[in-house]
Length: 122
Image (cartoon, rainbow, N blue to C red; front, side, top):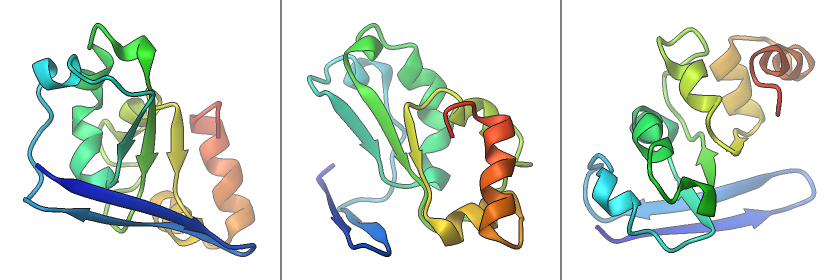
């Protein structure tokens, strides 16, 4: 599977442009253990959050960080298993709109306080 992820940032916003050649395929344990990388970028929460337990069981997990991008999805902090899975990533990077949607909060101040209760690294 070929994929490309490009990041950009401005004073007021940051973002990613991601492209995946084929539809999402689950990550396999043997493929994860072949990784020789310092950072594993997971470009979409909806596709990859269910792979996090498998990724974290890999023997080489201590060799790389997991950067989980949010992207548009219909998941919320009330989605079964999502909070537990996200607690295993090193960096979770939703933007403002994604944070509001994910938490169900109406303003960014409330949205940022809420995840801090769930994720100590938030």
